[in-house]
Image (cartoon, rainbow, N blue to C red; front, side, top):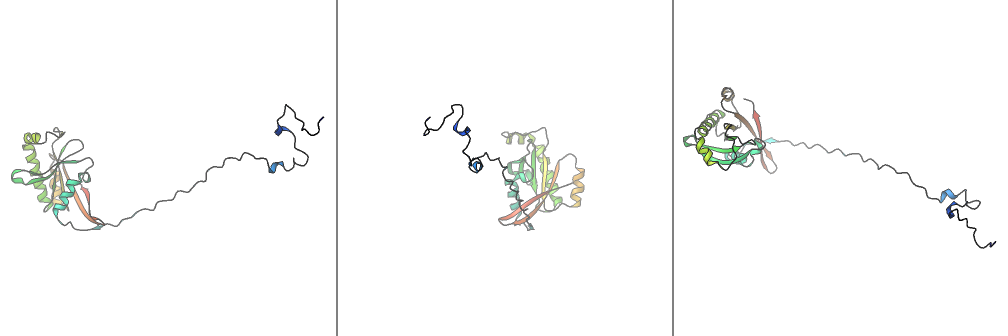
Length: 201
C-alpha cells in the first residue's frame, strides 16, 4: 500500500469520511448551517396628523364674482352638472344667468340673488315660466345637446340668506323643482372660497 496516497472509497464522497481525531469536537464551528428565515421586521405605521383649517368669513367683492364662480364650477352645486349657456335673455324678465344640464340631461335654471331671496324666488319662477312657454325655441337653440325634455326644467336659487317667507312660499309650489342654496364666502390664502349649503324648503 502506498502510504503517500490517501485512501479513496468509491462509495463515499470526501465529505462523508470521518474527520480526524480531535476535529470532530470543533467541526461545528466551521460547518455552515442553513439559517432559518426571519420575518421582516414590522415597521409601525406612522399616523398622519389631522389637518385642521380655520375658515374666516369674508364679504364678496361683487355679485358678479359669485356668478362667475357658478359658471366655472357648476359641480360645486351638484355633481355632474354642466353649463350650456349664460346670460340667456327672457324678454322683460331679465336674463337667466346660467343654464345648465344635470347628469340626467334635465334643464336647470340657475339664478343668483341680487337682492332679497324673496325677489329671487319671483325672478326664478318667471324664468321657469318663460322656458316652458318657449319650449319649441329652446329645443331649436340647444339641439346639439342631449336634453331630456320628458323632465320639466328645475330651478336652482343661490343667495346669502333665505327668509322664512321664501321657504313658506317655496313649500307650496309643487309644480316646480326648487333648490335653494345658501352660499358662504370664506377667506383663503389664494383668495376667496365659496361653500354652498342646500336649504330645506
